[in-house]
Image 1 (cartoon, helix red, strand yellow):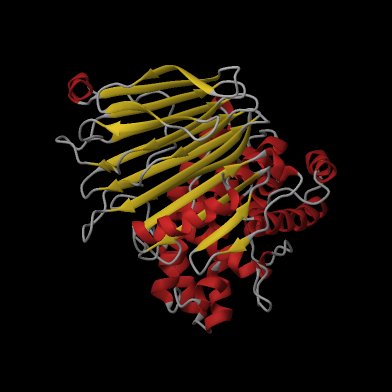
Image 2: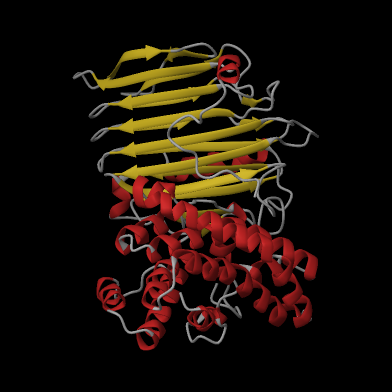
Length: 270
Length: 224
C-alpha cells in the first residue's frame, strides 16, 4: 500500500534537518459580533506566506483575503489557517489567487491545515481559489470545521490536477465537519501518482482534471431540506444526514468547475 | 475464530440481499466506463480503495465492539448521497434478519431494536462477525470482498461478461484486498483509543455522483 493512514493530528516525527528545511506558518483570524450589527476582527495575524488583508465585507460580514506572499506550500512546508467566529459573528474568507502545491527538494510531503470554529449563530463563508496539484508535489490537506448547532457554513473546495497539460502531483485531502460535536461530513480524496489504485479509473476521476465541492450547512434545512438532484452527468446535489447539502462536481477544467459550483452557490448558499 | 463461520458469512448465497445491488456497476456499465474485464478490474480497484476501505474500517470497528450508534453516525458522515445511505440501511436490515436467525445474539437483538429502519450494512456486518465468533480482521475482509464481488457479479449479468473472467478479476485483486483489510483493521484498533476519526474516510466523487443519478433512473436492474 502506498497510501497513508488518515492524517494524524500531530506532526509526524520528521528528522530535524527536514523539519528545519520546511517552513511552518500559521494564519490566525478571530471574528466577533461588535454589538452594532457588524463584525469586528480582534485577531488578524498572518505569518510567512500567509498574509491576511481585511476587505470590504457584505452587510454584517467582515471580509478577509488570504494573500499569498510567497510561493508555498513546497514539499516539507506546514501551513495552517485557523479562523474562529464567535457568537453571532459573520466572516467571509477568500484567497487572492490559486494555491500551488509544489515539489520540495527532498520529496517530503507538504501539509496544509484549515481549522474553522463557528460558535452559536455564527456564519462563515470559506471560499478560497482552487488548489493546483503541480507535477511532483505531495500535499496533505486537512480541513476541519466545528460548528455550533445554530451556526451556518458555506465552504467551497476546488482541486485542479496539474497545470495545463501537466501531470498532477499526489494530493490527499480530508474534510471533516462536526456539528454540535457529531460528525456531519467526513471525506478523504486521494489522487495523483502514488494514490491508491484506481484513482483515475472508472470508479475514480475517469480522466477529469478538476473536482470540487460546495458544502452549505444551514439550520433552516432541518425544516426545508434541499432535494437531491443531478446537475448534468458529473455533478450531484446530495442532502446530508443533517441540515446540510453537499454539491460534488467533476469537470474537465477549473473554469467549468467554477461555473457549476457558482450556480450551486446561488441556489443553496448566500 | 472459525474459518467455516467466515465462509458462511462471506458466501454469496448467504441470504442478505446483496445480489440486488451492483455497487455502482450498473451506472458505470451504462455510461460505458465498464465495458470489459480490464475496465471492471479498474472499477473494482477504485471502489475497493474508497468505499471498500471505509466499509471495512466500520465493520472492523463494530467487530471490536465499538458503539454501533456512533459508528452508524460515522457511516452517515462518510456517505453523502441519500441514495447510498438508503441502500446501506436496507442492506443492513436484510443482513440483520439473516444474522439473527443464523447466529442468535443479544447484541444483534439490541441493534435491531435501536435501528428499526436498518443500520448501515458494514456496522451490522461487524456486529454479526462478533456474534459468529469472528474477529475485526475477518469482518474487514468480508466488507472489502463484498465491495468488489458485488460489481463483478453484476457486470456478468449486465454485460454478459464471461463469469470466468469476472472471477479472474477478483482473484487478481486478492493482494490489494488483503492490504485494504489489514489497513482497515489497524485503523479500527486506533479508533478504539483515538475516536472514530481514525477510521478511513476515502471517497470517490464519481461513485457518489453516479449513485445519485442512478437512483433517479425510472427503470433499472439493480437497486444501487
